[in-house]
Length: 336
Ligand code: ACO
Image (cartoon, rainbow, N blue to C red; front, side, top):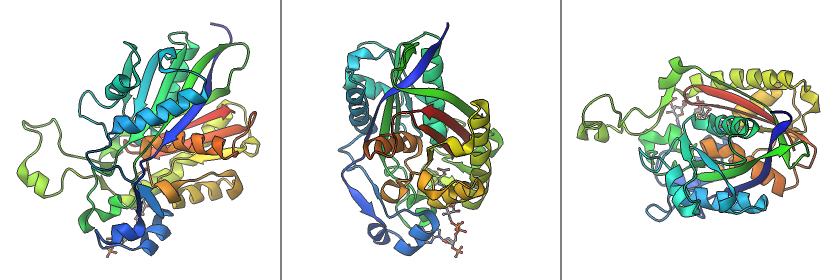
């Protein structure tokens, strides 16, 4: 292995057509546009038409766009890594349904579970697989359908207003010497399992026979539970920490980064992180106001939108940082 590097050569994203505004949510629960915007920055999000669109559908559209952007077809990829916390089925997950829809022969595919950091975890895996020569091209997908797993009622309002559905994808390719796309420079990942229950879905679980009871179902135990303020505090500490660690490892100064893409959990978290590091607001690209929190899909969606809107140009440095359930936190640096 000499100077074999991994590059992002294509990006793509897809969101369902159905727009759900804050005003729409006020018809389902006791909330208000003002409360949601003040606390999270979200104005609207997308929801699938239940029973009509699957996670694999979303992933398929995003993947096709990323492949087209890379000038490739499904037959050109060697492996699929799909990050999600809202798997189409408990097993085998989502990636296998995408595999079928894309028509990629018998190449390997897998679901990776690292919640809101799932994309950066998957990108590190793709980077390693490509640089070590195991595969030449890996399709990395982040895909979430949250709308079918949140409680759209007052009882679930603290979480339900935050999440949206969407998918984003990138193609990671090897290059031997000559640059081929946007070079992955550094990725750093962390986790702290002792906080797993601060943001989680407890049921159904495999700790007892049957995994779910009617009583648990009635009690709403199948919906996400979050200690919001605890999550907030950890996010605004860990995100700057891992971002600086990543930049140091790449010998890049904070002021040399052209664009910052933070996981779209909450605009207030991102404003807090930017302020604490004295990052000018114009260097931070957000789209949470239109899509809400799409967890593993957030960062690849940002990459796809930033490139198409001309916010990310060739040669620029882009730093990505995320925090999520697990807890997990991660950061990546790419020379675009
Ligand atoms: N609409 C109206 N009122 C609400 C809503 C809602 N959707 N949700 C909660 N409330 C009420 C609460 O019941 C509470 O009422 P009370 O004072 O009568 O008890 C009041 O609003 C304040 O609730 P808090 O939970 O204290 O509100 P807080 O100011 O902490 O904001 C929030 C909640 C936005 C979730 C905040 O804690 C936060 O930003 N946390 C970060 C976590 C996050 O963003 N998670 C996203 C997923 S995780 C990830 O991707 C990293």
